Length: 278
Length: 116
Image 1 (cartoon, helix red, strand yellow):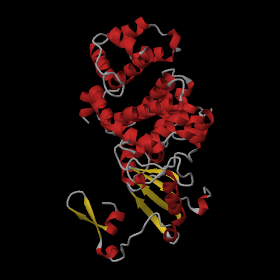
Image 2 (cartoon, rainbow over the protein chains, first blue to last red):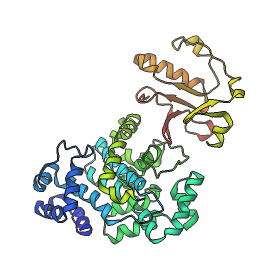
Image 3 (cartoon, rainbow over the protein chains, first blue to last red):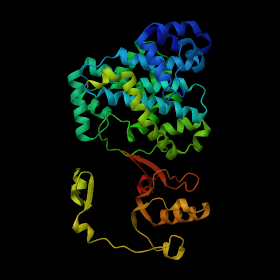
Image 4 (cartoon, rainbow over the protein chains, first blue to last red):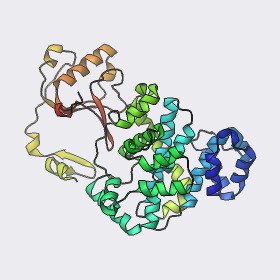
């Protein structure tokens, strides 16, 4: 059901039919139950889990349901065997970045914060490709990064000669993701090289950095000093959204910190069985 | 412990650190009224300033004044740390907000970085 879901996500919102989404959610009992649980988690803001799927879909809104579905499906699409990365940390980082992207884009008054969420969730998908296709080389890169306290991106380049951005791009293209989504996956570490100055790429880049500086990194100490406002991506976003100038980064960082507990909970809800093994 | 921590600190118990005696010898304590402009003017040459949960008791103009003193007294490339959940938003736009793993600091850019 993962691929039909992605197709559905690529459609413009007015073309998505309620019944199709309900059908997709009901397709698999486990997924349906997970969706209801996730919908009632603090991150998605429903106080009480709705007791039937149709009602849940209506009250959450179609776009949000698709986002929740995608979140749930990710765990099933990539079962954990022996990952070089700690699966728990990886999902925490991905979900955390998804949440930061979404909240950030809401603060900016951007039109589609669910899209920002999806970009955040998928931005590091290339790590999974590397885990599965190049397990040995990638494990060396992870060890190297943790020992030298450097970004995993740099260690990948040194050890393997390419990074999760390239493998992520290949996967995103084979999934027919939209162009800005592909760019966000391919260039979230070097937004200046993105083929267009997509605000989405800049948003993911900044959110990723912020997550790695707080308790939502890859699970090791990354020695880095980050000046978000001086980052070229900040200027790209500011050009598109003047409201960025009024965002209180300190407060935003603390809001992120407060959400960490909820994210850990969500990770064990969705990826519990799988992520626990690692 | 990182090499930097080992150099200046001793591990005490599980998660606590104690400053090495050689470093302790270099420490002096003294009182300072943050509102005393004339004394504040002479506190030059700081590398680091920690000011946690103090400015919350000040009104807007006093906060700005103290922070401006901090900025002038810091060396180029120095850092200023506030307490948890305190922010300089709308108080000072000369400091750069920077993130370190698990910490937020305000940085007075070094001259050669050309960011001042």
